[in-house]
Image 1 (spheres, rainbow, N blue to C red):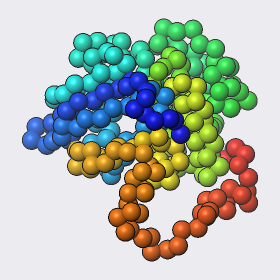
Image 2: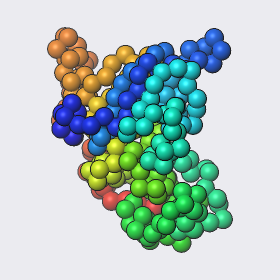
Image 3: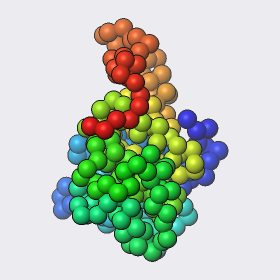
Length: 259
């Protein structure tokens, strides 16, 4: 986990953000900051407004009102500059099926107008041995790692990961956690959405929980849990020092495997 965020630079600042679709209020005047070099989780049930919020920050969707500053740049004044400094995870279904991984990276590099070293990028996500494979030939975990690699092509200051471990087996999931931490440790700010609360607890420095278009809680996972415990909450089942996933990993190993 990173140090006290109050000592860090704000890299994203959202103030009184509103998004309406006719009479439906998807995002209801929310405000929050993301600090440079942290893993920030935006959590909530389906329909809470989190995807809409992130798509607005990513310049993919217009806002109704409010102010967004990304690394000192006002979204209203220079969205193209913001696009150049962020990486957004692509859905694996959007990859051209006829191209191998090296060819795909070169293609995306061309879209960013950047010279990219495909093998260096594949090395970061442990996919060098799959360089000549097409994306459809990859396992689920490999597809997700390659998808994350595509967010790094333009050397972004911030990357956005949307439910990156959905559908993965425990080994692939934990290896992806390690990759996300490594990206953060190398100086990139990570914004993540997930429906797995253990994942958010393990990865995120701070979390904003959204529901019905509003942020209802924003703090570190530890502080949220401590506050709940201090309120008198008790789990119906005794908490053990390990869980079933830990057992599974211990018995089968953490190494990545082909499916």
